Length: 240
Ligand code: ATP
Image (cartoon, rainbow, N blue to C red; front, side, top):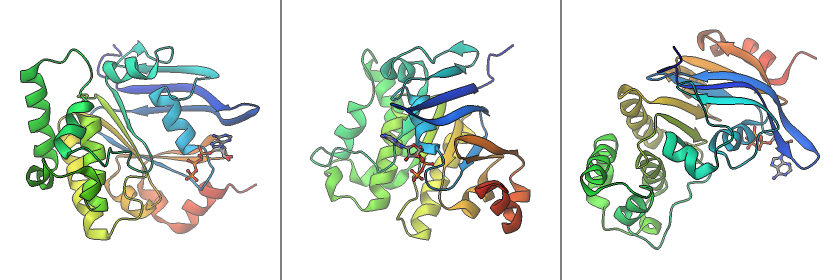
């Protein structure tokens, strides 16, 4: 029954040392849908992304992908299970070519025809990368690097993709191109979450919105009401 349900977080708690930054978050990232994860600086969004990727260990709660528990798996096993997270600050390898960057992210034990299929899928997603395959990562523009960062995540053929601040520092037309690519990914049935500072832009494409306030979900549901700045303010900073 949970097959095809996507990524489900239930009461997830996570933090650093003595600090608990995420206090019991529950949310669902559905196949073929876009979830916007919003919240003020320090609200806990990146901590949540790290909890999903396995970079940070859960202190409580569960994470399932299509009904299968993944929260005890290490990061590389989660990636193999179908979870990809594009970390904040596009960690591409600047000295390697675009093609090498992509190939390095494929994961072990994937056979040649499948690798080629995934490369094709990346280029269908971001046709802009096609002419850049032999260029060094460090020679790309910011937007191209971000496309490459997402492309690297796609090389693991994820069922669920979480993008942390992918549009940060990019020009509006570049963000448009990046989002068009992400929408092509979603059209193939991937469950996408965008963690965004560009609130209105992400609300415009999201199927569901989650706002995180001080480590807890303060809003979950229809993105439309949040387009009203007063409603947004309320859930963003609490009404304490
Ligand atoms: P931003 O948009 O600024 O990245 P965020 O919503 O992603 O914010 P987090 O980075 O998840 O927020 O931070 C949540 C809380 O955890 C904050 O209080 C932050 O100071 C704290 N925190 C984040 N990283 C660490 C760390 N490595 N060690 C200790 N505390 C941390």
